[in-house]
Length: 252
Ligand SMILES: [Zn+2]
Image (cartoon, rainbow, N blue to C red):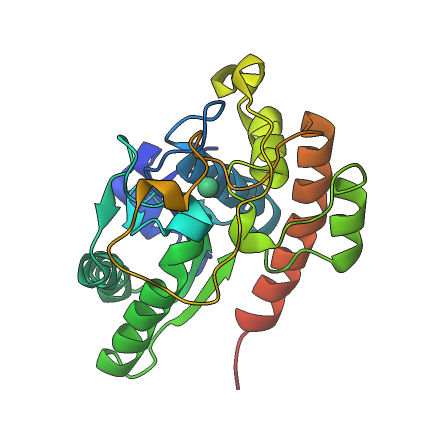
C-alpha cells in the first residue's frame, strides 16, 4: 500500500487518523552546478517515505517552497531558480495545513524538514496551532541532520573536514543523499570543487553576489557518494523512529 496521502482515496486517508502524518518540507533553491533545484524537496520527501515505512505513517504532499535562502546557508536569493517565501507566508502555509489536519481529527504530526532556514517558521506555526487548538495534536519538527549520531559525521567526512551544517549546502551530505535517492538528477561531471565560503558572525543587507562563491556551493562536495548517503539515511531513520515512539506514545 502507498505511503503517500496524495495517492489515497479520502476514506483510506480518513482511516489513518491515529497514525503518524509526516509533512516533508523542502525548498526550491539553487544547489550549485551539480544538483537540481528540487534537492531539499526530494531529500525531505524520501526521508519522510523511509520513516513512514518504519512507523506505518502517511506522507503528506511535500511543501516545495521555503523561507528565504541566506547567503551563508543556502547561497542567498541572487541565483535564478531560488524561489523564496516571506517568513509570514511559511508560517501561514504550515499553520493552514496543520489546522486542516487537526480539524479532520489527526493528532500525530511530524514535519520532516530539509531546508535549514525553515525551522523557526515551522515551529512558530506549531506554537500557534497548539495555542489555537488547546494542544489537541502532538506536533514534532525535525531536520534530517539533527538526530544524526555524532559518529556518522566522522564516517561521512572521512576525506574532507566537516564544514558545519549551515555550509553543508550542495556539499558532501546533500550530494551524497541525492546520489543515493535520485542519482539521475545529479550531474557529478559539473561539480566545481571550491574552497569553503568565509563565515560571517553577523547579518548584513543588502546582499551582494560576491557574498557567495560564484558556483553557488558553500563547501566542497568532493568525496560525495551514494554509499555515504546510505550511511546517513540508515543512521538517521532509526533515530527519528525513536523520537516518534517517545513523542507519539499515548499520554496519561
Ligand atoms: Zn539544500
